[in-house]
Image (cartoon, rainbow, N blue to C red; front, top):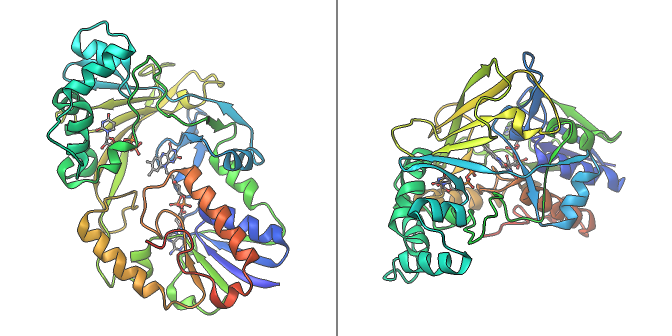
Length: 384
Ligand code: FAD
Ligand code: UDP
C-alpha cells in the first residue's frame, strides 16, 4: 500500500481520495485547514431556525454529465429543485436569466419567441464582430438597454472592475431564452442533496482506507513525506506568493434571522443597481422546498477584493493574473510527486459538477498509469 496525501476536503480532494481508496492500492490521508469538510460547499443546520445553511453561499447542483449525476446520487438522495432568480433593477423586478417574460416586461411588448429573438438581434451592436470582453459580448448579444439594466452595475459590484476588463466567458455562463422558461440553468439534472453537501461529502470520505484530519494546514516542507500528494488549495499560497498574488474576488455575508416564515418569497434575488451595495439576497429555507420552518434565515451578499486571510472565491483571470499563473505552473513542474487539481490549484471558475468530473478523470488515470508515483503529471486536466 502506498501513502497518499490529499490536501483539501472539498469535492475535488474527497472524490480523488475515495477513488484511490476504492482501488485497494492506497491509504489516503485527507487534511483540511478548516474545522469542517466540504470546502466552500459546506452546509449545516442553523441552531435557531433549523434551516439548512449554505455557509459559504448557496450551492445548487446542476449538470448534464450523466456520470457525475450517477456518482453524486450514490452518496445522498437528490431532491428536486429548480433555481429561479429574480432581479431588482431601476426599471422594476424581473425574471432572470433573460427570458421572454423579461424582454416583454422590460420593453412593454407581447412578443412571441420568434418576434423576441428578431427584436433582440436588432438591439445587438453589429459593429462588434468578435467580442473581446464581457461588455462587448453583452452589447453584441443583448444591446445597450438590457446590458445596462441587468449587467453593468451588478458586474462592477461583483468583480470590482469594469466589464470591459473581464473575459467574455463570464457572461456566457448565463443563458438567454426566447420562451418563458425561467430555470436559471440549462443543464439536464438539478437538485439539492436532502441532507446537505457536508453529509454527502462525509459519505464520500467514509472508507476504511481514508483518514481525515481537520484544522491541519499543509506546508510545502512536508513534500517527500508521502508517496504522492494531490494538492487542491490555492497555487499562489502553495508557493508562499513568491510570484505575486493571483487576483480573486471574495464574498462576505450579512446574516439575518427573520421572525416570519417567508422574508423575500424566493431563494435568490439579485440587486442590479449600483445604489444597493450588495449583489444578492439568499433565503436559505427556499433551497429545501420539501422542508417546513416557522422562521427564516437570509444572507445579503457583498463582494470585495481578496486580501490577507480572506477566502479566495472568484478568480478574476485578468491578463496580469494569467502571467502570474504561468510562472506558478512553471515552478510546479519541478515539485516532488505532487499534482495540482481543483478550482484553486488550477485557478479556474469551476462548478461542482466540473470539479467532480475532473477528480474522477484524474483518479482514474492515476490508478491506470504505469508508474504514477514516478511520473504522473503536475496538471493532468489543465495543461494550458
Ligand atoms: P474547495 O471547495 O475550495 O476546497 C478546497 C479545500 O482546500 C478547502 O476546504 C480549503 O480549506 C482547503 N485548503 C486550501 N489550502 C489548504 C492548505 N494549505 N492546507 C489544508 N487545506 C487547504 N458550484 C455549483 O456547481 N453550483 C453552485 O450553485 C455554486 N455556487 C457557488 C457559490 C459561491 C459563493 C462559490 C464561491 C462557489 C460556488 N460554486 C458553485 C462552485 C463550488 O463551490 C466549487 O466548484 C467547489 O467548491 C470546488 O471544489 P474544490 O474541492 O475544488 O475546492
Ligand atoms: N450577472 C449580472 N447581473 C445579474 C446576474 C449575473 O451582471 O443579475 C453577471 C455577473 O458578472 C456574474 C455573471 O453574470 O458574475 C455570471 O452570473 P452567475 O449568476 O453565473 O454568477 P455566480 O452565481 O457564479 O456568482
